[in-house]
Image: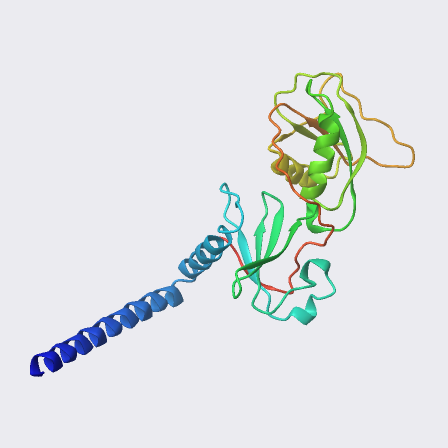
Length: 242
């Protein structure tokens, strides 16, 4: 009996030491994060994306920006935040053009929405031309790009004069949409260029063309479901990527 009691005491002591060591290490890590905001930001991104990656494939070529919903009442009039609760995380992939509303407390994805070009609801008028020999590519691309940027308004789909474009290109037709052209090119892995020789800008009655997109052979389109919505606003507290 004495041996049993001694053994139990030893286990209790070892357990206490182990518990103390665990909490000591946890506290030390917490102190490190408090002293280094950059490390804290990266840790939050790592933790949130790790949890989110269990439910969906995430972009691997960029680090997201993460924001926390602190007061859902201030953003409830925006469709994207209609079901938001305080504490939800907004994961924003700028390059991929996606915003994800995620609830860490339940491990649920609440909503996924495209990010608007230019972060505005003002329609961006786009003409899409098929620069390849793939039949119907302009129409397929138009449907795809609308899932990536909800304020894109495709005015026309047609074939380019040439069908051997190796890469997709974007032309700033309006002459003052350089930022939007760059964002569009980033979304489709294309290049911003001047109008190629031999190509023409279609004239559409009563409409002003902002961007011309010629879809090239390098285009890659993932399946997505369009969700008309506004982009997340400053009503949440951002945790910018470093």
